[in-house]
Length: 135
Image (tube, rainbow, N blue to C red):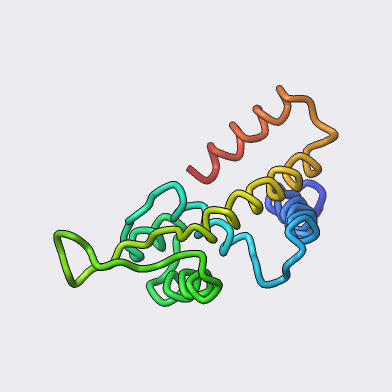
């Protein structure tokens, strides 16, 4: 029965993908969620912490923890908003930009390893179908 369940197959692929990603990153403290947060900050400089968390489906406290992780590593900083002094925007530091670029390369390597048995058309179709489920 398990082999016929889509959710079970997705979970097995997630486990494989997570394992490949952890090996590529080579830092057990950097999880997919933490990488995703750094990527969002890099692509959306100055975005409020709560909006970054919402984009990843995180609670306020979980978003704070993810941003705190990168702040403690000197990769991001919070700056007071120009229009609302009660809110903070989150920005990459120079060290954060370097770390993000390093991680992006490793994430791309892990992703390529995950789908190495598929053609480019099959990868596109897989991503299209998965998008229909989660978007």
